[in-house]
Amino acid sequence: MSVTIGDVAPEFALRDQHGQTVSLADFRGAKIVVLVFYPLAFTGTCQGELCSLRDDLPRYENDEVQVLTVSVDSTASHRVWAEREGFLFPLLADFWPHGEVARQYGVLDEKRGYALRGTFVIDKEGVVRWRVVNDSGESRDQSLWKAALEDLGVSA
Image (cartoon, rainbow, N blue to C red; front, side, top):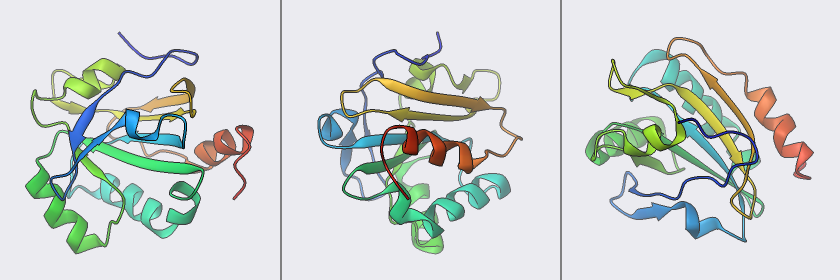
């Protein structure tokens, strides 16, 4: 089942690249969450997208907004990748049960065993206000996320 606009976002708690548990509930009532699923660490398109997030991080991680990225990779691979690329935002490991959070959001490619490029903007009350899902080989247009945030009153 796929999460659609207007749905309450499925709750989750996953470990980040530092082994710390991060949950969606951590931001309830406090921040808008931009939830970014990506297929695999250390791959070209994923690296380009996350480097773009890194380079524009003040837009996605501030008093109003928190970016959370999720893949089926392990916390150890996320740690190495984050250190190598200077990723300071949470890289969450949907490692075990394998892809369970991606499955809850309807973005797990069951045949390949990893997430599609799903992006969800979740308001402070936990409601999905914007979403787009791209195939694993299709890059995202981050200007669409920026517009979604502006629609929620977050200026760049």
